[in-house]
Image 1 (tube, rainbow, N blue to C red):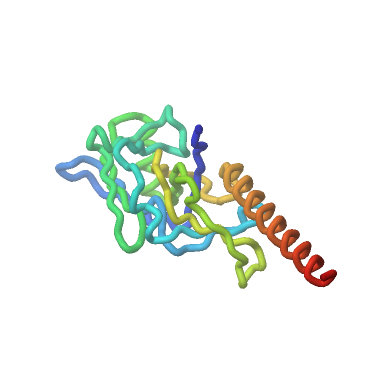
Image 2: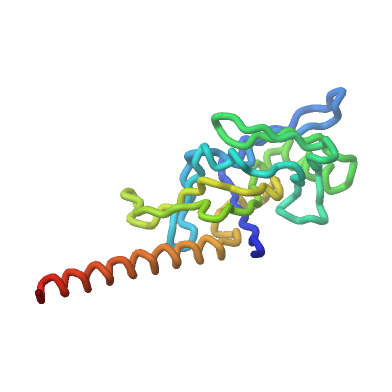
Length: 196
């Protein structure tokens, strides 16, 4: 079974560019935050549970610009990207390379032109659940078991609607189909009971 990658962006990226230190130029921030609600992602809203990263493989994660693999900023295997999970979410510390795109990004971060983060991931089997969101009336998807983080990205446009949500849409349809099938069986059993 091939796992398809999903990408999510957060609007409150909490990015910080630090001046040059003995470690070089660093960027720190949160690639994801627990318990925050997404915008409408095309018919559903999403949140990430605190337990979602408990079993996640984060052994080879890349830091990218706008999820573009040709603009790599760091990598956990190289020691240029450090990840840690805390009560807020997935925090990262990135030591920037001396490349033109990294220099441009650093300047844009310093000026405040770019300030948001995103992450790419694979969901574990049955790693999400749906319920009705009382606030919006839309289905609320909870990510509760992410199998792998593929990248953390610094993004220009953090809006969820600009991300690929095809897997989430498929999960939503499966959930709705399963719910309708259960309702149909219940109605058929009620009809059989009435006819007896």
